[in-house]
Amino acid sequence: MKEEQLAQLHEVAQAKYDASQAKLAAITAEERRLRDLLANLTRDQEIGRGALIADSAFRAVRGDQAWNSWVGNRRAVLNLQLARLLVVRETAMTEVQGAFGKADVLGKLLSEQRLSRRKSREAAALEAAMQVRLLG
Image (cartoon, rainbow, N blue to C red; front, side, top):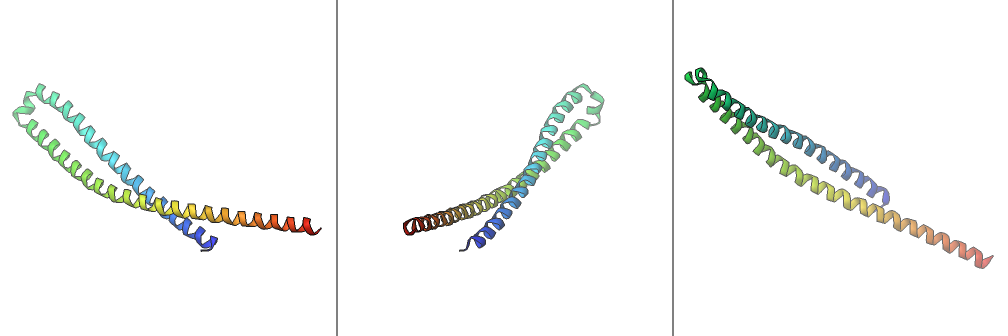
């Protein structure tokens, strides 16, 4: 394969790798956001638990049950979203690994081809110099 063709293939493979990394970065940011929401919910639940114990009027109208129900429902929704996102992240990780492998192999092949061509040129130049010296 010609060096130019190999360079073009490497460029395409590198672009696919970069795109897959960008996609994974967006997924990771969303995962971080969901985990932060879950952590905040846990913190708010602890704060709310203390407030509910102190507020008998809130318990009298069953506000404590409504609060706990809302927290439980919200946690279930966030955990479901996180679980779905983790499945998507696994697929994206597989894509990143595959794209990296292709870009890496093509990069190595291109480097080897360039090195081989340079060595051939150097050998030819050395041969020509030796010919000139022997003949001259």
